[in-house]
Every structure is written in structure tokens, then in C-alpha cells.
Image 1 (tube, each protein chain N blue to C red):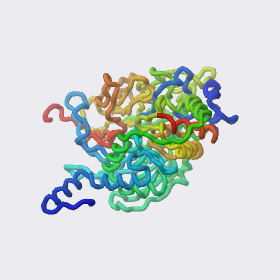
Image 2: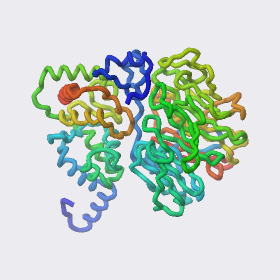
Image 3: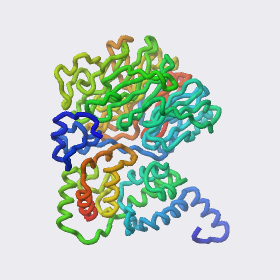
Image 4: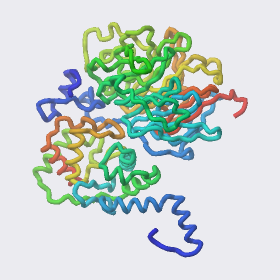
Length: 190
Length: 403
């Protein structure tokens, strides 16, 4: 523990922390912050932002990672042994933080193209017209551009198991250029 | 992999959305979606994949006929669906997304659970025979011999013998052994609406070792619940109706297989003779076996169980209980209950009555639980799994004598 309190209060405080699981959650949040940033808006290439993601989406994704069914090997390793309660608390934490991803310079032509494509492919049906996501469907707005390109390609080429089969095949026939345009637009959507 | 010809109308509706010259079918859940529904926000509901303690289950909201009661029997089985009871009373529970099979042990005053196997692709099918647990995932079949005595027993991989086809959609399973000791396995249509390839849209049976496969019935979109009539031994099964044809249906079906080889209409003819909106042919309902009864639009019929116990009043003997997990492809939610179906042994004069309700607040159009599967216990009580809250409820009858 990061602090020391002497005497019998220390025992009581420790007991309280253990009971609520708050200490474990705080420890895990520190680890999350290492890559995803403390405010949940990632500044690291390839690492997604978690801020303002729908709580259920974060919960389900972390569970699938813990179960070894989704995500990268490091994420599966990090979540190994995480309890449901810890995952629920971590999800609630990031769901409450505001999304403010910095996306860099805007290419107006690419942005307009991406907006038109997102409309054409009806992304807003499930992810909502403002792309803020809902329930088990993630926020796309203000997500990192490189991560969006990566995950959209993954869903097109080899859909991973999810809490539903919703997104499987939703990107049939979408080109890399279209994916880049949509990612450019979505990353700059607030 | 283009599965089959999708109706021209479906392709036309999506052709504009396809960027490349080789259009693939739209996502299975979206196939058959007419232009008028293009902006619909209907989508499958989110499952909950974390544990829900009993204290957070609003069990008091559930309603039953007079003299019945319901209690939380066990918790801690997120995503738990179909249940199979071992010879020694352990209960095995399959799941979909979370990839686990649970074992629930009754300790008398409480129940404990453990994970038997995880990391499987939708291991929804569980069945028990001859001291062995059978687990069927979309792409794997495992047998655990003597598992009730040997919790760490390694499974026998039976996958090769069953020769499962590759498509995932609608191919999570409900499985069970029939009175003939054979394993009955459904293969759903890998789409919302399409001409299914020949391995799909059917119910088969196998010998327990995977040999002797027979296709028993075809024209079945997605059957995830069945049982055998206690008097005639005939197979009765439910079938989920297609999406995107509107709030009215086509309704889900309860069917009866009076003899092997019957055709139940999919994809041309649904429910009580509703021609399909996309896949058309002349005389679409000709040669189609009609259902015993329909079971409501988009209700997501699952667990199907003839009641043969003696705890419930005599009028329930040999009647059917059916769990309706509840709709997503409907502007107002429907189902979220367990119904009782009474019908003649010949399937005539079927009457559907609500039995266990209260999961859905119709006024708010909100649900808190989703009843999925049913299991009759030796004492005649009925277990009901709630896939949403990962819990199992116990329905019992005391006739108002004591509560």
C-alpha cells in the first residue's frame, strides 16, 4: 500500500479496503493508466482511448479478454485473475471520464469523405448518430485514428468473438481507403 | 464465402452499400432488412457477463399462478442458458459468448458453482447420459466421463465424429438425448433469411459416439428447444421466426415431428402460412408442416419442457412449458416470460397461457431478466435459467397450504 498509518486504525483501514476491493481496483487503474493514460484518453500509438466508452461495452470486453477470448496477449495477461467486481469498477471509472482525444491536423477532404462513408454504412444506427456508442456498442467518436484503422481492419478480415455477432461481416467489401477515411472522420468527431 | 443466393430484393437493397464488385451478404442479423427499416435502431440487446448477487435480483417482481412460488436458487453463472442434470444431481450449464460451462452443486441450504471448461466458442449445448457430460460448442464436441465423481477428468474430444459445418451464425446449440438414447442436434440457418446450404436449417440425431447421423427434419430456421411427448414419444420443438418483417412477426413456432422427414417451411413459408417477403416461390406453403401453435412475434423461444412431475397440480401433467427470452427485433418488447402450452397429443387445440411473468415492465418497455431454459427436478420443481443475470430460479407449488 502506498501509505502508512500506524496503530489500530491501520488494520481497520486495510480491512475496509479489502472488503470493498477498492485497493485492488486502485492498483489496477494505475496499470491501465500506464498505457491508456490516467484520464482514459490514450496518447500512445495503437492503444485505444477508454474515456466515455459505454460501461457495458467495457465490462463485456474486459471479461472476454480475461477469459482469453479477445484482445492482445498483454491485455489477456493483465486481466488474468481480475474479479467481476474489479472489472465492473474499472468499467464504471472509465465510462465516467470525458472523451477529449487529440486527433492532430484535419484533412478536410478526408474528413468529408469519412463522414459520407459513415453515413452510407449506417455506423450511427448502433453506435448512435453522434457515434458516442451505447450498451455493448463502443464509442467511435474521439477514438484514436490509428486504433480505429486497426480495429476496423480486424473486424473486416477476421471478426473476433464478441458479446454478440453484430459487427461480424458489417464491413464486408469495405476498402482500406474507406477505412482510413472513416477513422479520420470519427477520430475528429466530438 | 457467399453462402447462397440471397433474394434479389435483399441484394438490391444492399447493392448500393457494397463498395466492391464482389458483394458479400450483409451481416446475418441484417439480412432481409427492407429499405423502409433501414434507419431502424433495433439491435440485439447487450448480455451481462458479470456475476449478479442474489441481493440485486428483483425476484419479487415475478408473478405466477396462485399457489406457486419462485425463489433464487443459484447465482454466479453469467450467461448461463441450457441446463443438464447429472445422475448424482450436479447441474451443468452452457453459455454462449463467455465460452464457459458451469457445474452447479446443491449443498442443501445453498448452491456452489465452478467452471468445468472455458475458452470455447459458444458452448451452449450440454447433455448428460451414461455418467458422462456432453458439451457441444459451435466447433467442438467434448465428453467428460464420470465427471460427477471426477471433477478433474480430461475430456474426450468427439469433434471429428460429429462433422460440424463451419458457419457460426445460428449454430450455437441446444442438445439432448432422446428416449432412443440418441443425441438430437439442431443446425440453424446461417443467416436471418436465405436459401440455406444443405447442412443447415435442420434437426439431426446421432448415436452417442457421433456415428449414424440422420437428418430428421428440415425447413427449420433456428430451433433451440425441444422435448419428447411423454405419451407418444414424438419430438416437439420450437423454432425462432425471421427478423425484419415487422412487429407482427412472422410468429415463432411450436412444431411436432409426427414422422421423420417432414419439412417445416423455412425459408419460404413461416408460422401459420406466412409467405416470406424476400425468398419467393410459387405455392410457398405447399408441403409444409404447420405448427402446433404459434408463440408470438420475435419472442425468442428457447427452453421447451413437458412437465411430468407430480408437484404441480394435475392439470399441468404432460403439458409443455416454454421459455421466451424476449424480443429485440420489435419496436415494443415482447416475451420475457415462461408460457404453458396445453394441446392434444396429436397437436390439436393448443392453448398458450402465461405462466411466469414480470421480467418485462411493459409500460416502461424495459426488461431486467431473460428466462432461457427449463429443467424439471426430481421433486417436481421447475428450474428456470436467467441468461441476463446469470442466475437460476426455482419454481415450486405448495397449493397455498404453506408459503
